[in-house]
Amino acid sequence: MRTLVDKNGEILFIYDATMCNPNGDPDDENKPRMDLEQERNLVSDVRLKRYIRDYLYDYFQVKGEDQTIYVTKAEGVVQAEDRIKKVLGRDSEDSVSSADLPILLTKLIDVRLFGATMPIKGGKKGEGEGITLTGPVQFNWGYSLNRVQLVESNTISSQFSSRQQAGQGTFGKDYRLYYSLIAFHGIISARRVREMYKKAGENPLGATTYEDLELLDQAMLKAIPLLATRSKIGQYPRLYVRFEYMDDETFIGDLRQYLRLSEEEGLRSIQDVKLEIGGITRYLEGIKEKINRVFVWQDVDLRTLVNGEERTFSEMLENILGSSKVISLV
Image (cartoon, helix red, strand yellow):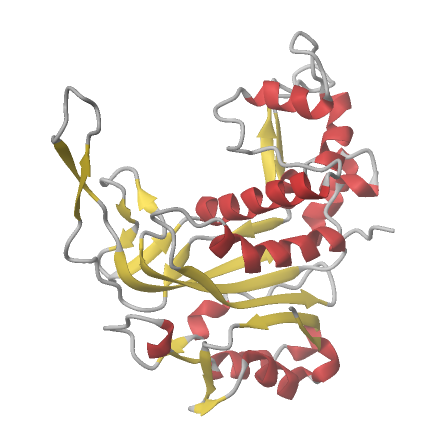
């Protein structure tokens, strides 16, 4: 039986990018998004969710289950209403109304997680032509913990193979970073789950469950390396931590502010990284009674330190919370 999420949670996710473009800025020649003053690489929450959605789409395609995603790139550019009709198995001339929303929510895991705006007419007069659902899982923008540098050489050439243009080539730009260690913060709101549960006609299959969060965990660890493209190859998860609190009121805040690198400049690989997490230790000591469980995965190549002494994130948490509350993800 699927169980609705009834406790708040938060996520700390770190991955790195080597000699690639983690998130191109379409307003700036597709250069990596940057905070130029701080020399930090930026990655939007939309980019991260795209990885997760694409992974979940492929996952359910292979499993053959009656689950899919709403915001998909697999079918090219389609109208949102056409996408909804396809999920429902409707003909193109059929209409869609708010009465269909509970069924859609049972089928669309990305809407249950992240929400969406859907072109569904409200059931009452004055409710408008669309429904906006705010999902319980939200991320803010990621940023690099280190100062980053653009690869100095960024011009590439391509050769035409057509008979008329044989031997001719074109030049373009391929912007990449040497190395970026990117950290994200996310939240999981149990109150948003209850709101979606009501929208789903109180069908527990139509709101976010703990089983959905287990799939989210899996996607966070596997999506980025599995879905690499030419500009994205060289990215790997390094740390994933999901806190589960005791109630639906607690949020402890963005833990990225307590992370420090031993060296912030000149990094070129994960072998150069030493991440000090002692600041998190001091903070968690004061709020440990609010934490129910913590799910943790750490890459073996990521070295984490507690006040200068090398310890894994799990070891740090077990020292504060006890081993029974720290669950290792595989």
